Length: 140
Image (cartoon, rainbow, N blue to C red; front, side, top):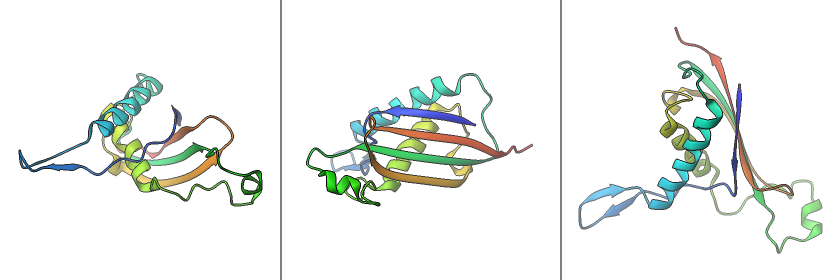
């Protein structure tokens, strides 16, 4: 099992763009930079361990900073800490998975993820993304 901490606000991937001039699809520059950051952090955290080739369990916690306009009353509500505004959770998961795929050190492909748990919330600590990766079983 390994834990990867990606500092800063979580990044929901933007949709690929279509170039009318060259008639091709391309990834926006922001997406490429965000994925490269995740890849570098994943490579460093994973080290020289062998690549996982079997089924994988992934837990991701997307921790956002509270907006400055948030009242104490809202922060104290039992479910007030869930982030339900823009930044879809599936686009955030895609950011993490694509970045780890680009690293090429943790798993062969994100298709190996058999179990996924993700939460998107506001937090009083520094904004970050916490990723826990665990091999469920190794393929022989």
